Image 1: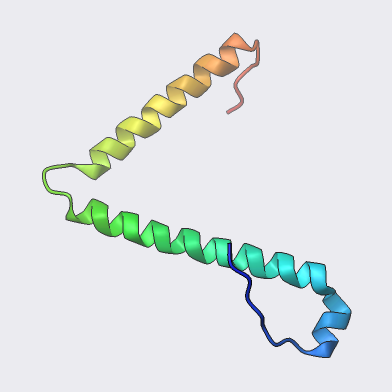
Image 2: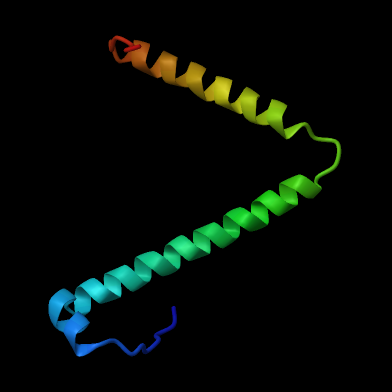
Length: 81
């Protein structure tokens, strides 16, 4: 992990506090990193030949839903519509 220094107004520091500003910066950096990874994954998926991704995602969605139903039934829960 790296440490960076940023310039911030005294007013912002007084209002938010150092800890809150650090938390906001860390969260924003994590969000940006996730967004970049998402873009990279989408590009790689689009460049994959011979795979019907719509079909694959629909199959995964249906499988996850079936697993959810089994879990709820095994826990004695009623499904809500």
